[in-house]
Amino acid sequence: MARLFFLIVAFFTGPGLLESSSHVRLVGGPHRCEGRVEVQRNGEWGTVCDDGWDMNDVAVVCRELGCGAAIWTPSGVIYKPLADEDQKVLIQDVNCTGVEENLIQCEQDEDVYSCSHNEDAGAKCEFPETVQLVGGPGRCKGRVEVKHKGQWGTVCKAGWNLSAAKVVCRQLGCGRAILTQRCCSKSTQGQGPIWLSEVSCSGKEADLQDCPSGLWGKNNCTHDEDTWVECEDPFQLRLVGGESKCSGRLEVLHKGEWGTVCDDGWGEKEEQVVCKQLGCGEPVFVSAKDRRRFGFGNGRIWLDDVYCSGQEQSLEQCRHRFWGHHNCNHREDVAVDCLEHNPDLLGALPADPE
Image (tube, rainbow, N blue to C red; front, side, top):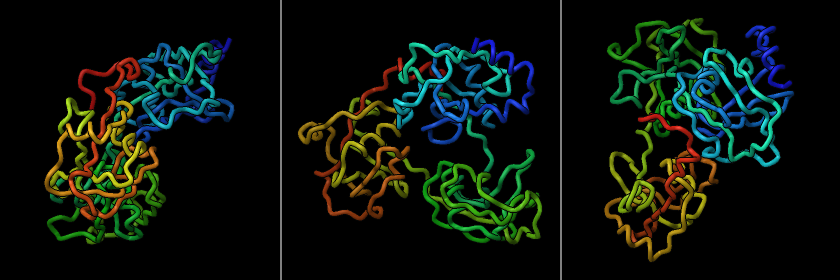
């Protein structure tokens, strides 16, 4: 009966009505277009069983969320924190053709049985490119441009601050924001529309377009007031000296130079973040004796007194001393050993996932 009800609703109501009565979100991923699939029914959020879950279903989720193309169907259990035990699995046996506008228009069963949170469905979509930095040395420095109605345009400096720059840097996958200023010389000014002004971000938004702003294209700015932002280069880390990318001495890249991390205050939560960022499984305890097999680093010790909650998607988001400030030697270098991922939990990966 539940399956029939959804089919009847999808047939007799239009997409406009369905949009207001059905909700879907992706939880625990690095951005709003990747994560564990959750749906809302009668004001309650719950997960989706992955029985029958495939790329057609992911394509509909991506479309409903305004994301890009479907990329793959990961297991929802790889996204932390896991669903609470009290949260319900609300639907199963989802069967979309791939052309629906909303997940509720797909054939699905509300009578969920023998499906636990170990079978939660996940989805990964392309994150739509709506902001870029232009005219600088690399993709993480330049004039801020946003895409609207298929056309790139600039952002006026009026109302802009460092919190907005933080959002741009995060959205582009760059490091932290280090500079924002009024742009530009004639050679680096924009020439198209000036789309935004009076942008007011808290700094926590996932997308610049989530920040309040003036009306699109309605402002009194000139290109002399275009906004310029500079971010640090993307944060990178690696494990060195082990048998795979999931074990070894921890090194981080800063200012183009690899360096180690001191083990002062280092623990399981910090290791969880490293393993997650590298796409590996859960961390395994490494004794001081075993750590020596990875060798000691040389050169810079970049980080010390790192503190993570365990929920961060990147080690960069954890608290730590200023870069290069420490009271350590290389005998205190951090080493991490993560399990390789169980392919049964990952779902079907594409041949070359992005």
